[in-house]
Image (cartoon, rainbow, N blue to C red; front, side, top):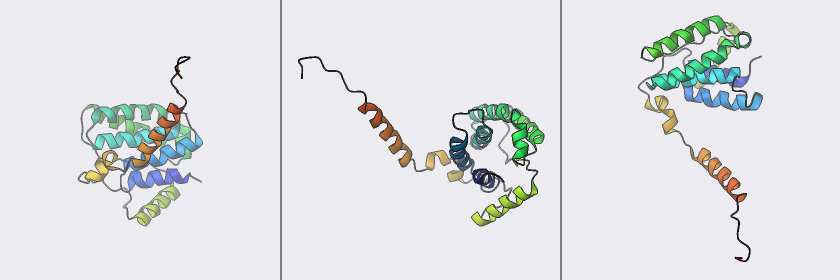
Length: 182
């Protein structure tokens, strides 16, 4: 009934609180099902995770910026949120309160997305158990690998993809030679 990537997102969002992983999972899914739509519900949920990631790292500017974008998108997707088993009104109200807390410089607290589908919650809890997570856990602020995941991950494949793309593009740009200089 729900996309597997969405369930994985929820498992990480509420289980190990790995917001970076939430971003990775849903970004890949979004690119498959709704590419280039920056107003997609998937982008709104990605931005929610990114805002939590920034907030936990005390990057209030980044957290507020991404939260503002998430709210804007998710406000326009209330029916889709309901179809994803989320209490849309509560979510939007919660996010507005979190946005205000960010403006005030309040410290990060773990957030629980208001899921209203008990079967979805049950599936997510089972997924947490399979991975050794506790559903609706509190974020471990002392886990530097989790808190600063973007700086500790292996980026070798991303770097290689960029180099390959750069090499591909430079092959098409050949310097012009003057006649007679060949």
